[in-house]
Length: 422
Image (tube, rainbow, N blue to C red; front, top):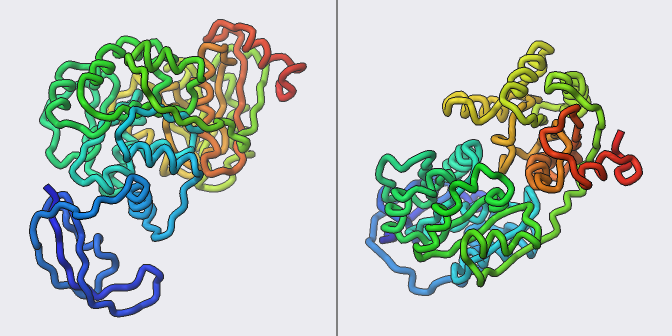
């Protein structure tokens, strides 16, 4: 049930022009306890009263709701969408009458699928299923920064979901369990958002959870599949083969990122530590101010920690991340990377997908991909340049490749077809 709150205020106009305004403001909120002074702007004097529960008389159209949500999210009375494409698919999310597949470039605002609806659907629940702990923790921070009530389930649901939860964030492992299915089915969610949907095809780790996640289809609600790197050829395998879905509306945009400058270096390195001087030199040339960050991806936990220690000895601001870290250390290291000027993150793919820091100036990846794992590399590279400025992506070959080479690998390593190889 929603409530209506009546306030008589004197406040500063949104334009910044100081004017005493005496009037009545009506605000619909999800519960009495969620009424906050910030909902009335910059207040200099207020008298208020709680009137009672209310149902909106004239419902807004999905496109109007989308714009209203964007206004609240940006705190801008006249915001603009990044593109007509973004406006179309977000409106379709709020319509909630069709299942959707959204293929948008990295940095294209896919997270708005679960950030905007709670702002205009105060009594509805969105369930977000994400593949990585690092991504889940980051999502919870973003929800908190926008005052959206979120709840995170990592491995198993061990407590009741709070009644005021607007966004339920779950790991793939948690979402696949029968206890999660039972609890969520009672909540009657508005939608399920399958974030980084390509992972169900690209990473064998998640294939063990496919059946459990697909079971959620038995619960009534819209399904929205979000990805930045699912090829048209794989649509059927994901939607029909895994989730048994036929009628899905697809939104797809070109996913090329012109601000990313790619290089391939055929150095045949024997270990992760051999990256040391390349990382240090790239950090020195690309991370020129405190907002700049770098990322280095290697395939093994041991390689991550060895390179981290070498960079630390060279006095490079650095931290590390892999799936073997305990939860508290993983959170601490991820936060250290965000708040430390010019910091480099050395990590495995456990840190790669969905991390949304705008000023990553370089990404170095140890290993030349084959056709089977190119999506993973695209996702890691997609962390760079999300502010729209130029960023560098460097692929470095190893003596013993972590992936079986194929024709695609050879194409990347051939100077004739890949001029940046050197």
